[in-house]
Image (cartoon, rainbow, N blue to C red):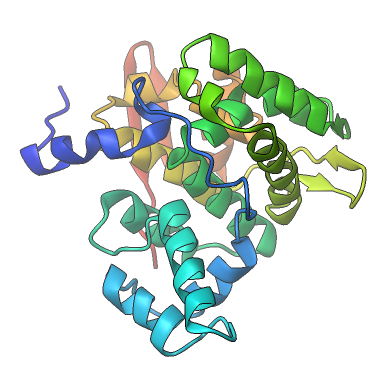
Length: 268
């Protein structure tokens, strides 16, 4: 049985991707995922910082080179809302543990994408429902009109808050979402974007495992989770994916019947 402390249990609902009551937010309507800025902010620091220190880096030290204080403040607000940027936050701390182990730009991009999706229910739903089949049959064209149809459909099924968004907001979200997929390495192209099926990397998979554990999921529940569709891994393929990661030393995994042994490799 998995025991979850009161402190962690209080934080469970702060992972929108796993919260059935989480509302869709329109934070992508004006700006993309800001992945480049995230990478510059995180830099090569040995340790993660608390939120106030990241704020000082962006606003006071102007590490992201914005001309005005208002632009720096706006950028900080947007980065903070997307990526949680606080070493005291369990999800960001889990992300940081994996981010610092990444061995390539592709692995870093996918790991940041997973954090964004976990922290944004709309991005999570788009990734696991709309984008999933397009990644599976990559290269497949990513159409803004289809993203708009997805959002409209969700407004009628579980997310009435979308009805309060203007057409401009919806179009902005759809365009910025597709542009962000390119930034994360899940698409290519400028005007016409096509999907790229991601390779299997340890860090983004381990981040999903860490997040599932923050919600109190058992190892058996983890291997049956559908959230791995964000990485184009169907539920029926999770065991095989874990087996491959075990073979290369990215996780420790063994399954026999309903007995699952799943351990994360400690960061060096």
